[in-house]
Image (cartoon, rainbow, N blue to C red; front, side, top):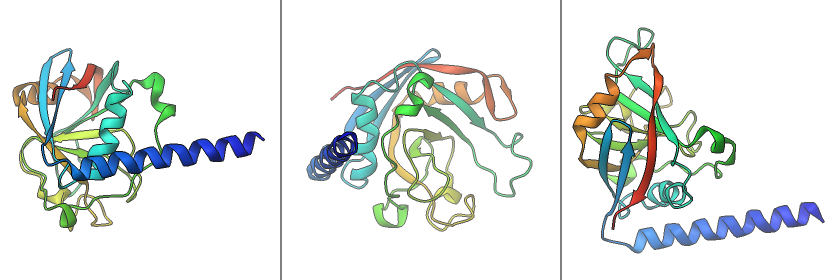
Length: 200
């Protein structure tokens, strides 16, 4: 009985996510969100037209309040990635640590070769290990990062990362977070995300 209930719930969540993707795909107007941090606010525009599944995934975490109490926990700068031949500059954030074990199922990778989006200054993109493994962690680019696009060499598989939006206000806050104290790439302490909310 418990197994049947689990399967039914999994099917329901899968259906709801598909409906979200359909909604996002049919939506031509970009979605704006406000990322409020302890160092200031960042306003971002999400491209639901070109990256519908990735935007829908991000928004389900936003709408569920999972980023409230979250944090930017990683900063990547030219001087703190000695073992990487390909250098990048990003900050990485995620959900409230108390809710980290409540992540939704991973989503399929929307490659930049399919979406036409690029990792430019201020681009929002999903963090991942393997392809099709992204859940809630995301990052923001500081400067253009072409090695994160499809065919780029930062990830050995060459599949790139799923860009899905860009910062329209608050790049100064992004840079402030990048320059905050860190132990190697771990921000010490992490920069608190007060909330992420839709603003249109």
